[in-house]
Amino acid sequence: GDLLRLAWPVVIGRAAQSAVGFTDAAFVASLGPDALAAASNGGMNALAVYMLPTGIVFIIQSFAAQLHGAGDVSALRRYAWYGLALAAAAQLMALAAIPMVPWALASLGYSPAVRALMASFLVIRLLGTGAAVGVEALSNWFAGQEQTRPGSVANVVLMALNVPLNYWWIHGGAGVPALGVRGSALASVVATWAAFALLFAGFIAQGRRAPRGGWVWSELSRVVRFGFPNGINWFLEFAAFMFVIDVAFTKLGTVALASLMVVLQLNTVGFMPAFGVATACAIQVGNAIGARAHDAVPALVRRAVLVACAWMVFVGVLYAFFPRPLFAIFARGAGAETEAMVRVGVGLLLVSVAWQLFDAIAMTFGEALRAAGDTAWPMWVRLSIAWLFFVPVTLATVKLGGGPVATLVWVVVYLIALSALLYARFHSGRWKTLALTETTLPPP
Image (cartoon, rainbow, N blue to C red):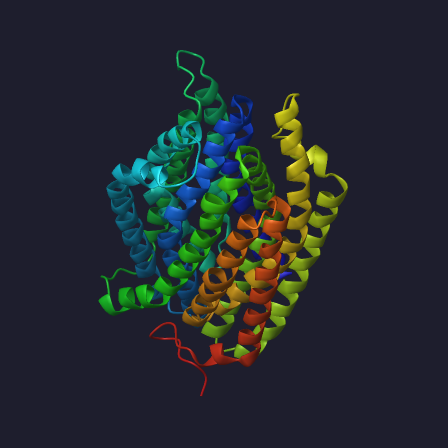
């Protein structure tokens, strides 16, 4: 139906986007556990920097969807420019943060070799911040109008460029020296800017047929007002997870850290269809609210939850029956260190079966609330559970001698609680009373 029609381009686009981190890790794996830990965790830390502005511009989809449902064509194009302005601001902030990278990593518990490699990786990856946020802004603007293919095409181009450039610049050849983890970072940056350029060209071309009009500052303030809680939510919730990795998991050793990074790469690929379904559902919810068909929303969300859960059950079966072959993509070669990575990683992969199922539920309800403009309450709930529960109990588990598997069990507990609370918020119907845009008011 319409859900899958909207979802499949999102799934392909997100899977292609996640392939950037996947290929970073897969191609760097041959350089050893230090390089694998540096590139994988460096990519996660770069993502942490992207999180705040990306979360803010993600709200562009909610505005576009509601305005599209309401038929307010004249306001639509302005919201894309608001997203692009925020992307430019994000790039400026990232450039300002580059000198602080070595200092920030020095305060964490990485080995000197991992720390040095990660610093060189991060400095380069931050040069792509504006492009990454710009891709999200324009992809979500198109998606809100039920055009999910432009973002998908841009991300497929990103992947198609990143894969060969990654291999070439990591290992060298044809006159290019072997750059190692720096080559991996450079390939990702070049591919991301190329994807943004393609998407921006499509946006400009479509604009030739669009109504003209200047910025409305009250609209931009609403983008920030509703988008900022979403961005803070993404940033600080992800920061809690990265804090656990950087502070707790580093104490468990490089093998445990590298194993976790592999599991997260596999999870990223496996989770993308569920993410696509949640995104498609959010578009439908926004369109329905814009058309003042609020009563149609619960059925849309229930269907999306069922589809997302069915997919994650399928992925969980693959993880449960084929953990070693999946993990062997990254853990190459013979030796005690490689065997230790596989042994630890298989256990972590099996734990991730449970957390991804509840993550899919939480994601679907969270995206539905975001589409309605309900961003502040979910932010406070997510951050309270993450920082007041998840971080303390995880750190305590490591301090008391718990291993990698025992530590990550708390991710499952955290996501069970989060999915239950987001369900309760959606079921309360509070989202029906919110007015996201100036032209889509709540029902009488």
